Length: 330
Image 1 (cartoon, rainbow, N blue to C red):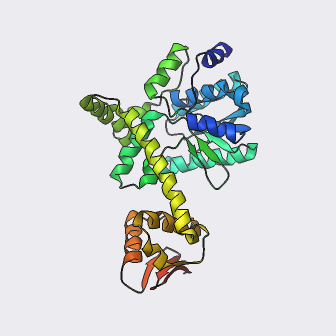
Image 2: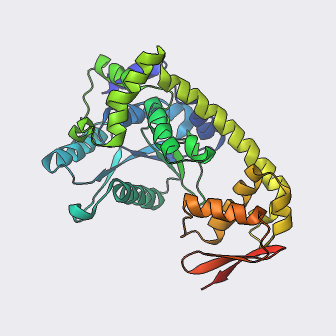
């Protein structure tokens, strides 16, 4: 294993540039690496190890067993534990232990993220590393375009994603394709776990990965994943600019004032008002997620001519009169 790690260093495999700069500038001292045992997360772990001494951080490994594939899931967990031991890294593990009949992709992801965040806090790591790679970008974009996503949805997965809970998510291998990652691991005679469910094309992401995106690349005669990666970067630059402009023009939303000036919101372009208002709404009601339909209704009401509007927030209401917008608890 040491020979392989030395090879990673000598052959200059590069961390995603934004991740590299973040780790340097923030002086990150400990990272929890989410490792499923698949090629992507194994590659991410080894690449981070190659940069340990240069940047100066410690690594620990976390694995969450969803228990969806019975014995195969247990084998994946054992593989990750053995890998962590070979690398002399601390290993953290949890199993779903839930009724599989009520589990969904969303609930599974939430359980995994909760485990990783709780583990990170417990070991004093303020950064969690994930194995998302370049092909994940286009797959995510296509799914979110189909749902009518905003720019925030289209810039995911981000290389560096800051959260208010103090835990930062990094994706150090977004600059590599799945093919390049597997080629590299094969070159170094490294095994990884293959999830048999990845071949199930009834799952949308698998259908995109195995059939639709390859056909799109063939039709366009270009690497569409690379193009999607560039688009993600450009959109993220635009998003940062809009965020800063919204904070400057509509500061009350970011100061979380109890009442907003409706006339101020109406005076700005909808692109800024949308960002500022829904930032305010989410922060004031962190447990409520406004549907796309409700978001459009609220935005239309802000710019509309009715003097009195009232919308349900589940346990309360958003109320608007001619001049102000506020939240009433139910």
